[in-house]
Amino acid sequence: MPIESFLFLCLGPVFSILFSFFLSLTLIDMDLISKYDLIEKIVQTTDESILWQVKHVLDEQDTESWEDLHPKLKESLKRGLKQADNGQVTPHNEVIARIKKKFLKK
Image (cartoon, rainbow, N blue to C red; front, side, top):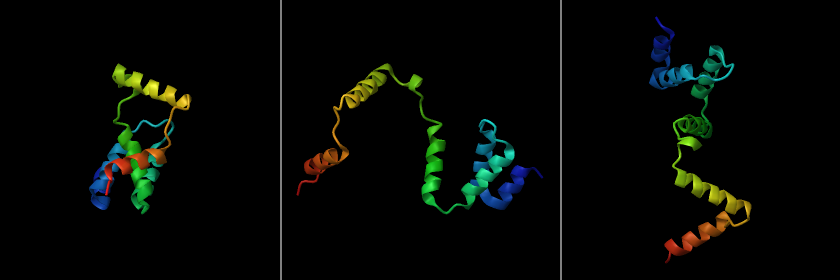
């Protein structure tokens, strides 16, 4: 019986999906045993914040890279970074206060 089938029967479809994904990873110098250890830690953890972080990292692999962005979006991002470098920013707490004042009128 192939190891994938055995793991699926023992640990269910979630583990099988994680197993398949991690087998497909091309991490530098990460051997198969290290991948299995990583999968085991993910399955055994009860800390949801860690699981969400792992999910976020894995989901990020599907996002666009800088080269894939539309030129106008790149220009806008560069302009925003330049403004931040020049101190032309509004602190988060001020933005939230403005939003609350505008949209949470009583």
